[in-house]
Image (cartoon, rainbow, N blue to C red):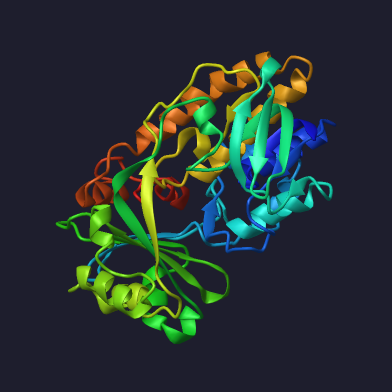
Length: 387
């Protein structure tokens, strides 16, 4: 089968690209490995900045739908010490420019905006090869294949499409998250709910060694937490995450001596902790132009979580879609223009988190000793923290 534009990956960036192309009457098909939209949880909260994610949603014609997803008050930020002492507390006064939404709900409005059949579920790319004339053939698990005029890798950190363009592979950055959730926290865990507050909590030890607790307040009293540990991957391999109780106890041991309302984020959840090793591509990752193929999102510029990844991927999709719509008969010029903007944009975002701030630097940022004070919750929530 032949398709003019083939996108591998139905994440936010790939779906924005598909939507923008459809708005301009350009045919596109998205292939996704997951068997259905509901195959797995789509993650927690996203702050959608006015300088990337919101620009992408405007290009996709979905700002009204986006506004309907915004969770009011979630741009509030609290910074606590390991003893639970409040070091910084900023409420959401409604003037912030990075409103929070649930990732799964944002993905759903993009899916709903596409004609039926645009996304082909249950298609895991297993191989890709270049053909003559800039075309490419993608093979899927099960043996089916598609030939495309333009191939876009929107397939994340371990992209199958990236090797067509680059030899770069993600490398472990020396830190991992352990993801946990507390449900119905206002009733079941009121002290922890109070500590988190109305939006985002960052808890840290000023004299610590890379330990962070970050939590976000989601819908329905859910607290979604990320426990950070600066450990080699071999360290995590010494215990079994399929034994939830043992894994929880081992992680909690690293936070011994912290305030109980904070360690409850580790120990009080009813779901198993999930290990999330952090990887990144080299800062400034780029490639020479290869006919008929390009990348967006994490496939192009994976970096450690910094509040920018989703918005950057969405903006990538929008910018690529607009470039192709402006030059539908000159794909190579469109791709050249898109990559000319992509490379410096993604390099700047990656460089912002290449330096892992010390706890004291974070405290200085929040309390204004380095930045001269912050005027809104949006400013501090956009701080490039390792969270």
